[in-house]
Structure formats: C-alpha cells, structure tokens
Image 1 (cartoon, rainbow, N blue to C red):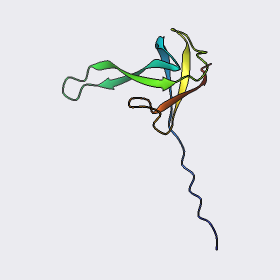
Image 2 (image 1 turned 120 degrees about the vertical axis):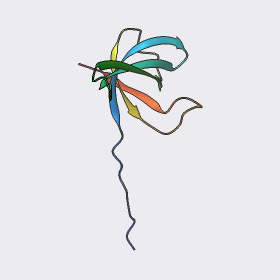
Image 3 (image 1 turned 135 degrees about the vertical axis):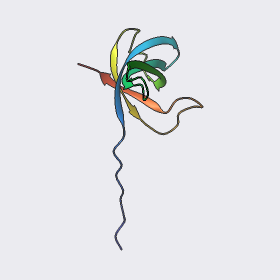
Image 4 (image 1 turned 60 degrees about the vertical axis):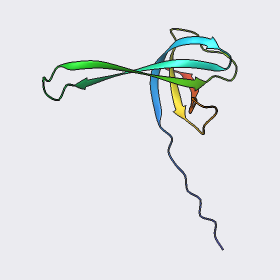
Length: 85
C-alpha cells in the first residue's frame, strides 16, 4: 500500500524587524498598499507578526523573510528564515 504524502507550500512574506526585546522572538512589520474602495486613495497598511528567532540573530531595522509554521506559542505562527536582499 502506498503512503499518500501531501506537501504544502508555506507562505513567505518580507518585512522589517521593529522589536527584538523578547527572548527568541522578533516583531516583524509587513507593509502593503491597498486602494480605498470608495475614494480610491492608495493607503499604507501595516501588520505586525511575532516570529520565532531561535538564536536572537536579527536586530531592529533588519529586512527579513518570515515563513509560516506550526504554532509555537499563543501568538507565534511564523519563523524568521533569512535576511532579505
């Protein structure tokens, strides 16, 4: 009998580290531009994600790529993968 293996592609997003005050955790701000549905003005929307940083390598101001993962804590569902180029 064959085993069915399902591979899922995890989401990756680029953002900037805005806080590194926690142990093994950084806060990454992700910026997106969206158009207002009625007035058609382009707005900047920022969302903040808590991401796991195992070795405390990343500091405030670093541009990083975070990847979706299993829940690590109540708020953390992302892992910092690498510095963005």
